[in-house]
Length: 210
Ligand SMILES: N[C@@H](CCC(=O)N[C@@H](CS)C(=O)NCC(=O)O)C(=O)O
Image (cartoon, rainbow, N blue to C red):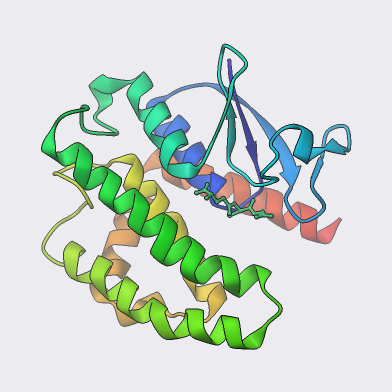
């Protein structure tokens, strides 16, 4: 069985969404990304991955796969019939890769990461200065369409939806972009996405009150 190391409402949420959309059962391990400990036994999370970051997907052969773009495509390719990623070699596969990179580099690492992890106000401010332009690109792309790639949900939608959910906590109000508001409503209303988010929000609440 696949295993996913995650932290509630971190970017590993996109991997949970992909697993749930694919209908793949997995074992989930809570990994505290701040203290770098695996919650179940307080072991060193760096022993799971030297990156000390989620997601980490443990494959059936024991190999560990990191990096959201790789993990998401791996999960999607386990169930090709669901179209969670276009097939390799199809022009849309490169569009999927394009969006996974964009969300990962321009929204996640360029804005969310400095906002939540850096202490330096100047670094946060320079991340803030760039983010509206990146969000605008996603908003313009989605204005005439329902999903990032093709005409149905792909794993890139789970990743973008996660990043949009966190933008508000970073002081960026997604309500300024109507196409993103309806997109997020559409993605969040999918049963797998809804269940994944509700589960992680609940867990997050439990962790912050314990
Ligand atoms: N490049 C990685 C970034 C993963 C990442 O930054 N994960 C965050 C949570 S959203 C984390 O675990 N950070 C802990 C750390 O960087 O120390 C990916 O795309 O998956």
